[in-house]
Image (tube, rainbow, N blue to C red; front, top):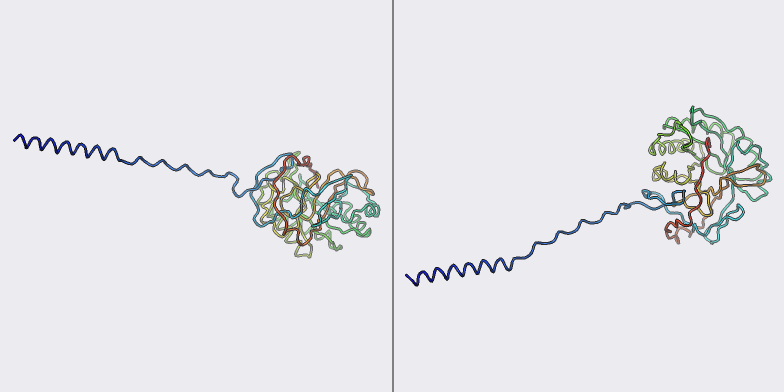
Length: 315
């Protein structure tokens, strides 16, 4: 009996030891993996906001980055120069009836080689269509002086139907002329007082631009879109504008628009012989074939950002 009791004690002790050993060799619970950090700017690019800072916008996959070195541009006494051998610039102006009578021969003699002329506009209040009072005089005078001529229509379209109406109207105004440069769709929010365009969304603005350009292209005109920083980023779905000529307003000493564009409007308050008062000044790029091949995207240098751009009511 005594031997049996001892055996039971021994078995119990062994069981306790075994259980204790199991508890002692138990592996610790795994530490949970941290949640991956989400990049809030994935698929976006940092661009100049036109007011001395930067902003993040969705990257347009259908467009390519600007192929010239933006920091090789400079403006001295109102004249733009570009110092690298992968491109050059041609000087121009854009005008409307606000510049009154222009001596185009004097303009040409000053070195200006092209002009973009407003042919008409839609009112931001009543929405009526109007011709620029001097568009014929300006087209004919500029071409007679040997300048290459393009045109623009100041749009306040709030629907595709209105954009189509503007295109038909523009084509009628230009039916007697052959232009060397595109006709540009210039849609702007007024900003200084209530306007019928205040609540138009980017999808609608983009659709209006595409329709305006489509109809004018069907009439044989080259077409493009004008806007200024930052509105070109915020008022348009840029991927949908692939294939159009871009003319960008961005006053300063170098072009800040991230993507390829044909014309840079570098001054709103310039001075040109033959034009009384202030006038917008522009350059058109001439890019060599190897420019894009050697391009490396440049980070935005906020410290070099130009002064904020202004706007002009009614185009």
